Length: 123
Image (cartoon, rainbow, N blue to C red; front, top):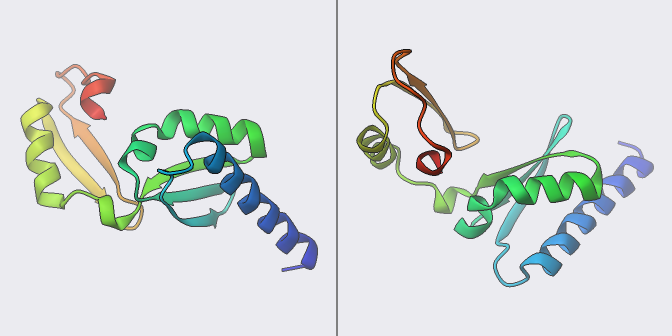
């Protein structure tokens, strides 16, 4: 990695930290910033930041001109069995749940005859 690339990465980290210090200085809970190909993954232990991830990602994309994804820190992830039980209780017609342990993301496959759940249920 060249010194120019290192400077650029440090500058991005600084801009991200500055954004969170202005928007929510007490509750950002940022634990890690990773560069994953064209995306910047920001890990947080703040449930509030994670719930607001869509708006935060949009704000950061505008600010730093890079793709951004907000992910939960391991410390706030729900237990897999607990999540599965809650998902099956709230969402009808689940065919399967595919867990990605590395990113904390879950893909929910539904039966084709079932309408998709509302955004509020998914959050």
